Image 1: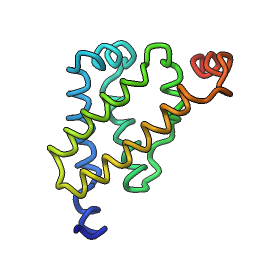
Image 2: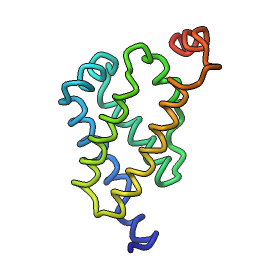
Image 3: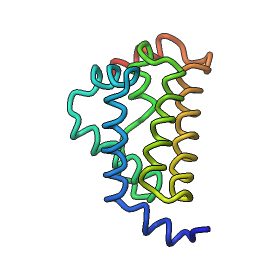
Image 4: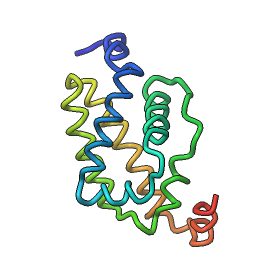
Length: 140
């Protein structure tokens, strides 16, 4: 079992940047997810930096990410199917397992599972999230 200090030595900004880059290269090549991402992301370098900041905040507590993942996904909810999250998670698992020792990969996978569950619940399973709220989020 790895100690927290060992995980911190493995899960660095540089390692997260490499992970995000490798992961989204796979997502972009995916037959289902690729067209969705290619159709919605206009500036890939900026997007990869934003996602690196997100994972840095989640895993390292840096606070670098200042966005709203839910609002970002809500703008595209009409193009997203709940099963796409499972596909995204499968690619994430493959990429994290390829790049990190088992305990670090497991931590990355656990965090991604929780984030995906939260996004799916908010996007697809909250009856109080009306069409008007979705429209407002898309135009934000």
